[in-house]
Length: 114
Length: 114
Image 1 (cartoon, chains in turn purple, brown):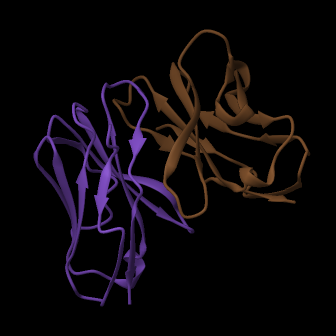
Image 2 (cartoon, rainbow over the protein chains, first blue to last red):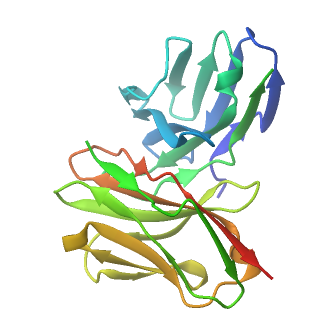
Image 3 (spheres, chains in turn cyan, red):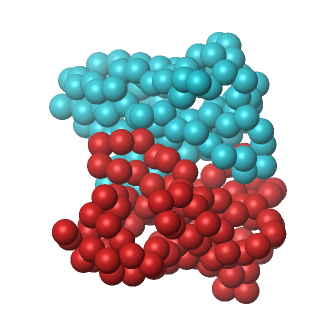
């Protein structure tokens, strides 16, 4: 089975540009998560969805960040406008069931904002 | 709110040495516990998990972890490390009243010298 698929794998963009990260969860998984990993802050949960509905977005750092899940097989994380401090690895993950079932991570999108 | 502490940020060991990485969490209720590993340049992968039952959990690649409820700990161990174990290790906790949110520790970078 294909795992969680993220794109792009690597992106370098200039400050002020819009960045869109994409994720395709594992088919049949009802939960989708977006995490950000930085050296300073470690791994942080940004937002998660259940059945395409955002459940908790308290981890989203600012209004510049937004996430959508228009259907069960696709989600986007958008940063507009991007800033150098947004440089990080963004992981998408999915899970089939609630209550701490195993979460499967994508390979990450490595974002550099210059 | 739940939190997870990994007190060792960097660990350097020689091959064949024994490993123990500490993980403590703060939450008084029922939890699920996980260890994830991230090899250089790769995504997070599940090493092992504890939901209930035997508090000594065996994972992949010879890793094990012991849940000690009275100490709020879930330390990761391996009797004899290999160079290929060089990676970053993340402890994570899901509290049963926290939906499907995983809270991660800050990670421990392990370097194994050949």
